[in-house]
Amino acid sequence: MNFSDKPDRSATKAYKWEKYKGTDILPMWIADSEFRCAPPIIEALHKRVDDGLFGYTLPAHDTDALEAIVQWCKKRYNWTIEADWIVWTPGVVPAFNVAIKANCKAGDTVIVQSPNYPPLLAAPAINGMKRATVPTVELNGRWTLDFDALEEAAAAPNASLFIMCNPMNPVGSVMTKTELDRVAQICEKHNVTLCSDEIHCDLVLDDVPHLPAGAHSKLHDKSMTLMAASKTFNVAGLGTSFAIIPNADLRAKFVRSTRGIVPWVTVTGLTATNAAFRYCDDWHKAELAYLKENRDYLVEEINKISGLTAIAPEATFLLWVDASGLQVDDTQAWAESKGIGPSPGRDFGAPSFFRINFGCSRTYLEEAINLLKQA
Image (cartoon, rainbow, N blue to C red; front, top):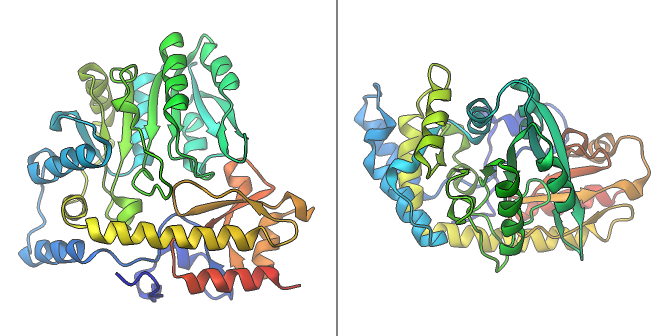
């Protein structure tokens, strides 16, 4: 559990590092961490590989992985779910695109919050739908939704689906009960279905609870909750996530919309998810402690740099940095000229910002801060 390691990822063709290959720019962009998987996951994968057979495996037959999710939701969120509520998907991005296909018709409007990560912002147009964008606003030193704007968007006649990101990416806020109550009230009032992307829900760094959308009484029959082990346990490359859909009719529409398009999840992904949720509690606890220290260090140092400000995220390993004070035309070019490669704010709908990934060795963060402080 040495999270300070700096593994050489060049041989694995990691997307994060390939982007800046051959340059002196330190990659701090896409949301995967620099942490090697927990030993129980690696051991489980070795065992599965040693079996030597990788034929068709119907995910529904992997009852161990399904039960691991049921137990995880109960243990982490006190959420009692049924195994048949779970629909396996090869990622949350395919899942919220499927949610659009399942719940929207031609001419409908899909509501999203902004800033948001690029695939979510792009999803409505990809599926031929209109997009209504709800701003994220700063309130008392914390990012939250503009609920008046959400109410207005949901009231539009053709609004049918709200894709919510909670914990929010890139700002890192975790929705409170009051905030989730408001979302539920608005969705119920205007007959809008909720698709809640909760892929970062196991990366809450502060002493605040994560409240799954599907666990809310008013959202039980009108929501799809998307989760995965991928961000928390750094197994995104195994292409495995899941949707929890309590309502049978909503679940059936979702499943029908996957047919012939969405592939089964991988056998290695099922193996990793099962091991992550059953055997990695100590590793997970240590990861959260390390990430919290990284966050606190990075926020403090970023706020010392003239032209940059940041609010500490309650969750994720991502820091949303306001670079408007630099008064430069291109904040991404400015950061890259300093030698770091964050995620460009323009891709999230906020050109004056950038997003730094702090799921890495502290020494990388120290290097990044030194580079940013250079004249």
